[in-house]
Length: 289
Image (cartoon, rainbow, N blue to C red; front, side, top):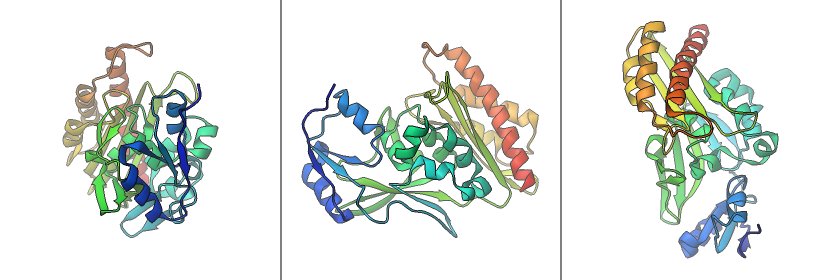
């Protein structure tokens, strides 16, 4: 199918993007990589009156590390994150997830910020950002607001972003010096959406777990924080026993559908297994840091 007719705009300044969104509201859509929006338009699940392309806006394509953490602009591609030595050294959860995003064609064009704004419950970056306690920076003509990712998703393909706002940046807090994490993904074939995914992050404090981040992919209406499991881990001495307890709590947080990819019970069992494996790998990396 072909998309419905639309007006195309390619502003060279962010202020012009915001003016277009203020003028058209729900009738406008923002284009970054287009890996989600264009297929939806071709299927006519989305039929915007105006398409506002961010491609010419300066300053949105940078990955910067500050004393507070990582800043990732709205035009940073998955492939750039996949190749990042900085991520491999200091943000292992992200480094583990980046090569698992779809396929090379998508990774060369798609963006992390766009993936979060699309809010697919099977999206990998959503769980990674939840585990890392990241924030989304949104801009509109009314100003700027910083939204914790844990307050960002509201349902399938739905976020707290307003029609007049554009997500311009994601901020990832700088992890402690003794931290580690990973992302595990079950997929039917390379490049597929997740059947189940688990993002795990641990920060050690005097041989105990100072902070734990644990989030699940494709087992709910949006990416799910395993909050009870995080509480089990916080302050505990890391090891197989507490990891198994956290895995059970994470499985209780999962509410997956039974479908062609597997039964709900099967997916919960994958959650248990991946949480144990992910936490063990996170501990290994944190102890080696």
